[in-house]
Image (cartoon, rainbow, N blue to C red; front, side, top):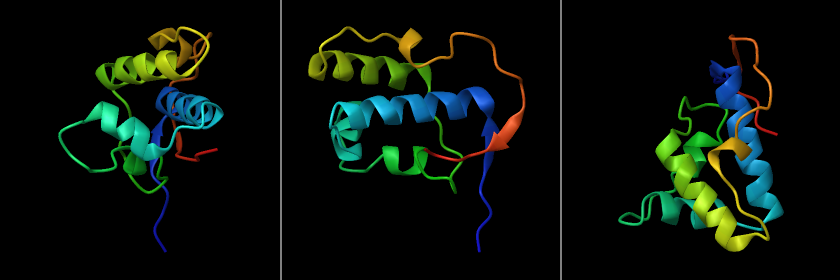
Length: 98
């Protein structure tokens, strides 16, 4: 049995926030992956949303996600929407995707 990966608490917050908004907007992993890397058919979100992979978002990717969410949603999204409103404890936590 594989052990879950540990990532920073901020990275976990961002992954779970993006995932929640993505599902709310009824977008698939593939929909977002096409925006993040239009030159390939690889599913970039699979590893990011997997508890067994260290992949996380970078700000360039989050900016592209914000543009997609703005296009699909009824509001304007920015990087700020994906980050916590208050500081989190700087620690590594188990990558539990909700």
